[in-house]
Image (cartoon, rainbow, N blue to C red; front, side, top):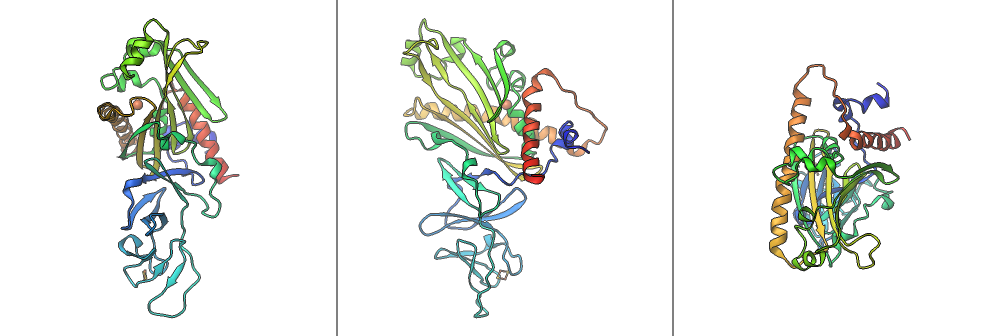
Length: 357
Ligand code: FES
Ligand SMILES: [Fe+2]
């Protein structure tokens, strides 16, 4: 099968090989402490623990001696002790002691570069000697003290590519999220942009209806908006196989108005394959307004979690059929699939870059 054919049919598309030369979210910062814990990311078992100084370590969860899982061991100082025969590993993956002999072998576990930002721990899954820091997702708002972020981890029993396709698909909002996000047929009339940019496939829609647009803003902002044009943009693009960046600012005032105000909202989705059919899914929303209002953020979190659970449900339902239903089936493409189909091409480029060069 040719490369292009492999992305035409979803059943083949979701079997594209995993891409390792990227940053992914390994978990929430709070998931990792002094006690070792194991997670499978991109079909690799990895043990995570923190040193005495709190530095996060991510290394191959497989003892070099007899493949015993190191997450069953204990931390001793900054080292990890295998529970089977007591071999001690330093945070750099080197062996510091083998209890039954004097000789210390010069072997090394695969240690993954990690970086914590805001509520998330990111991990570089490629060559540990050459993490590509230019590819580290540019998300400074996650740790910006003038903003507030809510986030959630959601285990999802499906391919990360099905979920990426969902994120690139604007038209499902008016059906799948009709009740949760209150989006109806008006949605199809909003001006929409879909374009391939150097950052990826960008899609955006613009709503100018004040009743819908101003809802979440502080009361004084709503007062200032009276009589002025308003806009809510709702756009995004996949920065990498595992990170989708959404941006949904609300503008008060015309574009040429020097007093135009903007209220920023970054709606992020992070997809880290566990296997090719199961995913560690995370989302976060960062706003630069209402940041003292606990109630607003509690309600926003419940509202978003409810809607995003519908995406998880839909993708899991599709995954189940793709796995179990073996009738010959050719999917059709409709107008709303444009961004998703363009994204398949971007995804293929990442695969080819990694496996073909
Ligand atoms: S299996 Fe780990 S020390 Fe033997
Ligand atoms: Fe959705």
